[in-house]
Image (cartoon, rainbow, N blue to C red; front, side, top):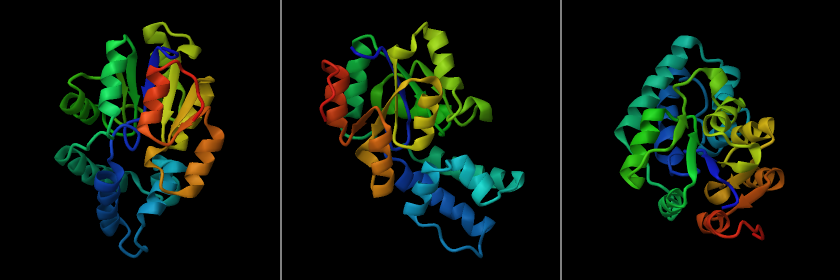
Length: 224
C-alpha cells in the first residue's frame, strides 16, 4: 500500500450526514437563537463549514455566546444520537479491505467520538484505531495539526506514511500544517466553488468512492 495510515474525516467523507443531521439540527437551533435572521440555506451552511469552518460560523459569523453555543450543541447532540448516518456506497468495503491488509484507520472529525464509534461498529464491525472528535479541546481539533502529529507519534509513522482524506478546507489546512499528503473527497460536493477549490488545492482529488478505492488498494498510481 502506498499509505500505511488513512486519516479520515467522517461527515460527508465516510458518511452522508450533513443533509439529514447536521444541517436540520442547526436550522432548528437558529429558529430559537436567531429568529429574526433569514433562514440559512443548505448551500450556505456547507459553504460556511468549508470556510471559515463550523467553529468560525458559530463564533465569528453568528457571534454565538457560550450559552448559545451550548444550546446549539444540545440540539445537534439530540439529532446525532437519534440517527446513525449511512456510509457512502462502497466505503465500508474499502475500509474493511484496507484494514485486512494491515492499514491503520484514524478519524479526525467535528462529530463526537462516541457517535463515530457507533457508526463504525454498526456498518464496519470495527472501531477506528484512533479518533479525534469534537469532544476534545479546541486546540486538539482540526484544522490544528495536533491530530496528525499525535497519530504519527502514536503509531511511529513518518509523514509520508499518512494520507489525510477530507471533503472540506479544515482537513486540507490540517494536512498542510504538517506537510502531509491530502486527498479531496469529492463524492459529496454539490457546490462548484468548493469543488473547484478542492480539486485545485488537493494532492489528489476523487469524484467517486470507487476511484479512491482503486487508488488506495491498487498500485497507488494517480490518473483520475
